[in-house]
Each structure stands twice: as C-alpha cells, then as structure tokens.
Length: 460
Image 1 (tube, one colour):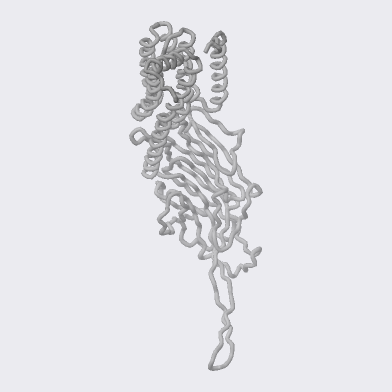
Image 2 (spheres, rainbow, N blue to C red):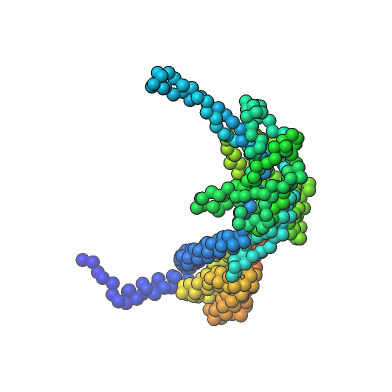
C-alpha cells in the first residue's frame, strides 16, 4: 500500500524546491532563459506593428507620388515610317468558271531608331511630406537632341517607291504623362512638330509607357540626315531612366539630391561621377555594340524596358526602417540586460524574483513601442533619445529597489546607456554596420567572460 506524504513532508519538499530556485545557478539560468523566450512574443507583435505602419507609409508615399508625378522612363524619339506590302488573293467566279487573282495592298510600319541620341537632364530634387511620411520628388528639365540617318529599308526587301515618306511621324514613349509640365514638340531640321497622345484605354496606367505621336512630317526632310531637338519638363518621383535607342546614346544628369543610386542595365562613368552633400553629376555612354537590339524594327516597337538605366533618388533608411532594424536587436538587448542582472545576482547573492525579471523585460519591450509612436511625430534621433532615456531611467530606479545598492543600479543604468548607444550607432551605419556590430559583440562577450571567470559554476 502506497503511503501519502503528510502536509509537513509536502511543506518540506516545497521549501527545498524554493531554496533550490533561490540558490541554484542552474535554476536561475533556466528561469532567465525561459523569460527571454517568453518576451519574444511581445517583440514579435512589435515587429508586426512596425511592418503595418511601414505598409501604411508605402501607401502614403504612393499617394504623394500620384499627386506630384510618378517615376519617369523615356523611350524615344523614334521615326515611324509607313510602307506598302502586297499580297495576292485568288477567288473563283461561278459565272465565268474562272479564277480571278487580285493584288491587295497593306500598310505596315517601320520603326527606326536615331543614329545619335544625347540627353542632358537637370533635376531639382526635394523631400515631400504628407503628415510624417517622406517621399523623394523632383522636377526635371531635359534637353534631347540627336540625328536620324537617311532611312533605308532595302535590307528588309522594301523598295523605296513603297515607302510613304509623306505619312511618316515621330513616336515618343514615356511614363508619367501626368507629370509633363511643358507642351511637347520636336524640332526637325528647323521645323517644329507638336506631339499628341495616342490614347490607350487601359485601367492599369501606373508606370506604363504611353505613346505620343506627331502629325505627318514634311517629305523633303528625308533628302538628308535629320537633326532633332526637343525639351521636356517632368514632375517625377523615385526614379528617372531612359532607354538607349540611339546607335550612340549619352546621358548627362545633374541633381541636388545627395543620395543617388545608379540603377539599370548600364553603369555610369566612374571617372566623371561626382557625389557630394550638395548633389551629384553623372554621365553615361552606351554604344550599339553594348546592347542586344537593332536600330530597325518592322510592324511594332519592341519592349526594351530591360535595357533602361538611370538614377533612383533614395530616401536613406527611413524612420520605420530604422525602427525595424532597432527592434531586430530586441532579443540582444533583453538577453544582455538579463545577463547583467544574472551576474550581479550570482556574484552578490542578491535574490531577484522571476516577476521582477519579467517587469524589466516588459520595460525593455516598451522602448520599441515608444520609439515607433514618437518617431511618427518627430525625427528618429529625438524619438530614440526620449524612448531610451525613459526606459533607462525606469529600469535604473526599479533596479535600485531590487538590488538595494546605488553602485549596482548605477552600473545597470550605464550598461543600458552604452547598449542603446551602441545599437543607435549600428543603425546609422550603412557599409560598416556588420563590421562594427561584430566587433562590439565580440567585446561584450569578452567582458562577460572576464567578469564571470571567478564564479563557481559547480556550487549548485
């Protein structure tokens, strides 16, 4: 027959377990580790909150750009040349019992790219805000000039007499028609021709190339090479790119934006690039040998978007990106803070209750909600200072009541200050964030190993 424990025996066992929790290093380590894992739950909710607010920022930035002007992509100008083709159609006549052959005429189009295309673009950039959300916008003034060669379709087996020079036009494709701020016209050998929109009833118009076309050109233009010149002013945002349709294409870009990112299929000239706090200048040169498309297409203009290049006007690590990067270090902050309390508890024999650890952990997670909410109404530095000082002061005062020592609580305060300062420095860095972070973590690990070397881990 099994003998049940008496109330006195159960009390003794409970006291032994409580004593083990208070005195055992292993028990304290398990308890601290468990609490760190538990605190990952509110940290995950905070990360979700930051992502949600970041998505809201994306929606607002898109709203800003739609009102100001979307991304700009230039494709052209291109010479559109109609020509005749013929086909035979045979029909059977029941009355005469004979076959009749008719010749049908069809109108097709050749699209001829320029021999030379030079663009000189000056962009006045600025940050635009809606509430606390920021987008990079610009006003660009671009001069486009170059030369069309004398059209020849003989390589495509098209006779000169079948070309309708009198119905030739110039095509210019671009995104962001809404952002164009000048009348669109092109000068060909001194003669000016206005562009009109070839309307395409498509519901998805964002970042889609729209087509502009001139009236019919003067037939006399085609007796020699055609020099062209045009100017266009855009209100745009985020990116400015061109497609290198010239046999030789050059792009010179100048802007007051200090954080450009050169994007696309071709890199700029490193020797002429100049980036400084007042802006940048950059030059590109693309030859026909550098691209995988020809100078002449029949029936339809190809989609050459993959060959576009230009500049993205980057808003460096915005407030939500900084908050998200800061929250990624939440596990590290909580773990190191608990480690400091654990070492103090182990070395000084001061008892710290699990509930007190939990309160300290929750205070550390509150830093991130304060940071996100305040940064929406101020800049990131001010938000970080307010949130950091609030949490450091709160935990320092709370640790004073727990540890009963001004020396220990002061050490806690200085450690948290150093930790938050270290994380802020990492967040601000771009190219050296990983290097500085790795060195910092190595030094922290070395410090912990040095402090804990005299602890008797076997006294359990």
